[in-house]
Image (tube, rainbow, N blue to C red; front, top):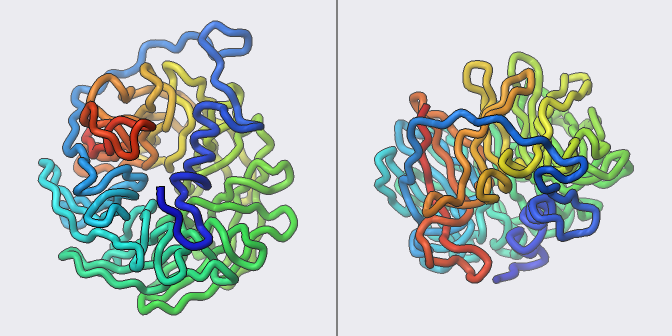
Length: 407
């Protein structure tokens, strides 16, 4: 596996290392999945709701990409996404796909223009914007734009110093200015919040790591009434991550520090549902396999659900989506076969598994959130798909999928 500049691809470290830690408990301090029936394990879970239809739209074969970590976006009825591997140079791709499964590779990264895009794209007035976790001039990641026909342009190459390094989260657009986060770099070398114009002028508005404000942020920001909210995977009072808010001028405040029993290692962005924020932690909680939580804008946090591994799901690494008051997302591990789930959870904490991955060629290890297009859910899996086809074998079988799930 390739290393660019001072930032190792997060597929070796960073985000995926934390996810793997939470999923299989191989690193010190990680939560271990408890077998069903073991002391302290979750009881047998009642029967789940079975969806009427699950369909794989695309199985990546490396030539068109592999290992997608980002959710899709819908632009005028066509879905757009990124893959962290594959393509002409093996450095990742930008692709589009119809809802019937017809795929087109818009751009293959070559390293100098970026490597390993882990974040979703955003659409700003018909132009798509995104980040790569590595590559660029100094190897520390990029912000780029790409047209829907495939013309790509690097807007900024991170230098690994005060300007940040290793952007792994999606950008957001606030009144024509883009805002994002980096996993590393900044004054204290543990991440930043930055702004960037659509022409490429970048400014760091906050460097993490001063005191208990948290560090290592893999999640995108959200804008709630002009204030930006986000999460850090580590740091805070107990070292298990934080929820924070920050003004667009850079004044930051920690709203909540996770303590373990209420979750640890939030990896995903928050969502706003009628003034209450909802999110996930990839580990911690009652059974140490992750949580769904709510938090008010003033910082009052509540655990809605604690995952219990199998057949329940574990390691929720993706953000939630809200569909008429019900929240939907994916877990990276757990489920019937141990390779992740699609689940729903009510805002009062009632959870249902809608699909367990790993039964065949349906995909494995989903790391991305879902999108709803006309009442059907669309998502990606990081691996799985065609049996015997490996992306960087022998670690995983298959290069990942795009899937559709119906009610």
